[in-house]
Length: 414
Image (cartoon, rainbow, N blue to C red):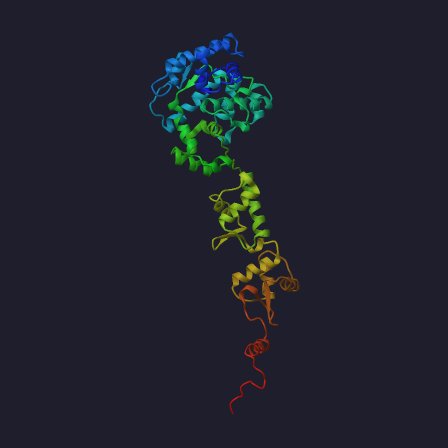
């Protein structure tokens, strides 16, 4: 029914009578439109006019909606007729078509909101307060007006969808009392909408659920339309709204927040390090849509001197680790051999930490990751499985394993 471009009063009258499709309307027309209870004289005349224009526009296997609009006296947008609209031509014409539609339905204030909030790059959107000062209204009025514009444009560009999913609302378009769904003075050419429909068909369910990073948005544009974000010019934010997508804005503050979160995770919770995929998964759970993507993580790590890449895993440098025992583990693994506790304490001090030799011994004894090597003062990692006893203890263990005693032990040669 939305394709007939009827006014809300006519749509409500037909809905009250249980008429929700064009086929049901044609069947009811055979019995007479005059019998509609909720329709007045003007509403019945509008429905009859739509049926008359529809009968003149029916082809063998389809309906010529452009011809239907001409018979009803609508403005045909865009004015130029093309057999095929390329993505570049669609992007060039979209701002003019949107401005024409809003100008016919909304007036001067709606045009200002369209220009400052929708017909601009997603990163350059003017705030609600500044837009309100331009047109002499409050920020709340601007927000409601923007929702109305988005809903109306969504209904215009997706005429075959019953529900309006734009601007976070689930209400029917006919629920709005203002000019959102009148659509009684214009008609878009179907071939003009083809690039937008192809773009929507190429989106995955994951793209629709989450906020896209600039890298993801660029990847999708290059894959579907073979264009870059700068080629969208003023249509970027409008296209995002029409497709129901969100673009995660990357600012310096967001990058700094992500860096702090990475430092805290690697220094406190994961001193052994994380792979890039593991780090991206954890950040997505912690930060949500504002989390950096896997493609952005290498740049973040390179910019932070406290982080390093070691054997394919991101980790904090030894001097940044919060626990002394973690620093000792990092120093021992880097050395690859047992070290004296005095040297461990000195190395830890050189890395930026503070500890005495006595405190270092206490840390080593209390942590099960370290084992002493006899009474030499050397310490090793337990995971190395080294013989850490004295020579006497090693010999006694050897004799015990072989079930030797003093009587059965081999006698020395004379």
